[in-house]
Image 1 (tube, rainbow, N blue to C red):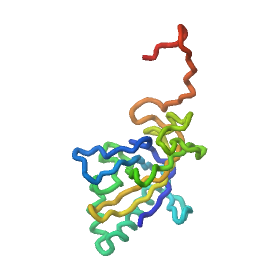
Image 2: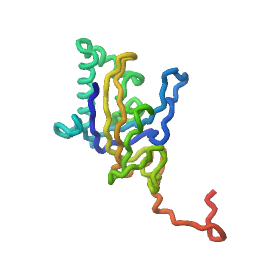
Image 3: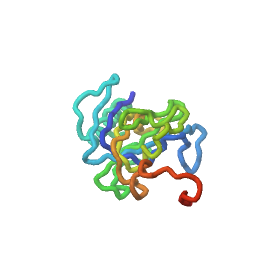
Image 4: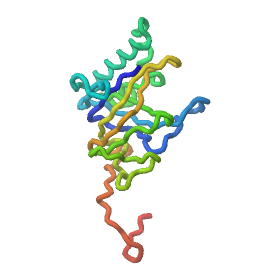
Length: 210
């Protein structure tokens, strides 16, 4: 059994939230499934709180500390008497653990939580600030939602961390993402804002944007 955590004020990275796709590995494994994915950059401002029975429990606190504690509790449940050894071996392994120190990727002061959701589990809930959905059940965008979710923006999210027996690992399932506020896009440049563009008509007055 996993532990559900609600994250607040985290930065979104590498989102794959429209059409699920296979993991981009050198060698495709027979049992690989298409999945949605998102990584969350956890900074000093990020907060977290556990979710039990559909309700928030405990006090909202530092997100890194909350994730560290949750992974420790998952390890205890998964490996029992051997949990400390298993945890110490798995935590540094980027293939075995969903939780990595950003300093290893030249991002000091940031921790990265990678999450996925298999296609057969149903798509994750992706919401705007007003809780309206951004994607339709067929994975297409609702009207007016283009550019509302992108890499580099700030979001709230809900995930489930859990222990895997074989191969051994600590994993994270994506449940919910909610837009919080804009941020500089990681690919460089400002956030896309559709409202800044005026309508254009065909003909002599239309600009060539090619």
